[in-house]
Amino acid sequence: MKVDLHGLPLSEAKLKSQISVAEAWSNGSSTIELVHGHNLGTVIKDYIQQGGLLADIERIYPEISNLILKDNGLGSTIVKFKRS
Image (cartoon, rainbow, N blue to C red; front, top):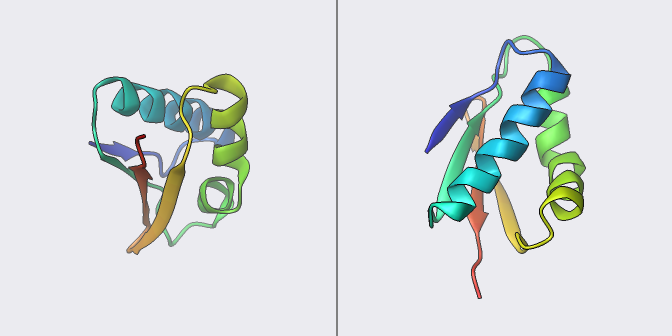
């Protein structure tokens, strides 16, 4: 699953990324790619990669745990679900 966030205001990108991660988890996906862009600033990338997304997911969806984030380069981050 690939979700395009770049160009969105941060508040919309946060909500869309949180919902997309929850949907991917519910659908049994092993990964989701969050496309945040790389040319027009790093606000969305920073939210995803510097702990904001993980903290929000843990707070809103406590059943989703053990997420692994990997910078995919070219303006995207891969979220991998580590299921028990």
